[in-house]
Length: 423
Picture 1 (cartoon, rainbow, N blue to C red):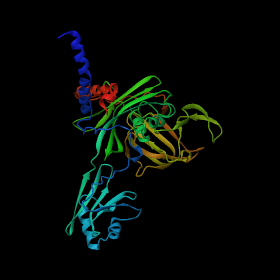
Picture 2: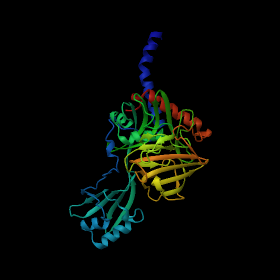
Picture 3: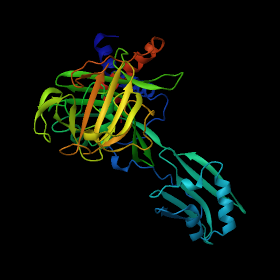
Picture 4: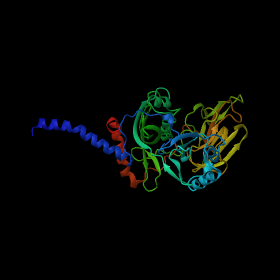
């Protein structure tokens, strides 16, 4: 065979080979999830991320959707659709082994399937975003079961450039605010997405999207992500340990993205005052040390613990107003001042996780307006939260490095050939 003929055949086969390789990478990265359905990826409706309605239906019945009102019980609703007192009790007894009927949530939807004789033959209730309750009439009794919502998970490639805010950039890319915030969480140990972002920063990510009846429902896991901030590249690859199921994000070499402390206790908040030995106090009207970072944010903005630890104070503390103090390993203590309220159940001796919401921004105590005063002590001395270099967490376990690097290669292939792999 002549060289020219071989080149012609190779040119014909190259796109096919790329398509085959792309498909293999796609399935490898998805961990065996269902393959995507044909059709374009238009970003769906990100705002529709609430629990979805499976609408499995019931042959020969009319579907009636009911929104649960505040203070309304399941007994109230059933009685309004012709259930006798004994039927209501039978219904509740049948449901109780799989779901507590008293735990229906106001604002959620019930779907009733009513036959031509106006008898309810089936009821569905979305427990959460993952499962729904199904109750069927069986002669004079009822049969109840909990089913998984039959989502189809597809992988999407998203990219963009920050011109004003990260949320604005994601919106311009056709995505919702939720994805922008999830992306910020991935890099929260290295990047403060209010303080550190710059115009011209770029991002790329591979993310799961969940669909029901071809309609976008919610975002799943971010599988891989890149962020170029002021010319510096940050990378994140998700890996779930096969033996424990615990997942985390690592850089391309298997180093953990986690540090001892998050860079900020707020997802988004404008810094109005930095750590300094001399600052003019806005209410005391005199110069004094300010061993904290102040974040301006609206009342009610969630405040996160920047590291795992044990609460040693959650109460009123004079000029600090409502304050939380948390002890962490290594001799660190963090403080969160001027809160409007605490998270439900938070009190002294409560253990909290890094990133857990512990309270909400306010202006309690001696504060000129709504903001969070955030402080860190190390062995009793104040340190600058913005300038201190915290140690990274443990890297990827060595026995899983080969598997992890294979997934990094798969993600890199998608980054290089997104239109080929993701449809």
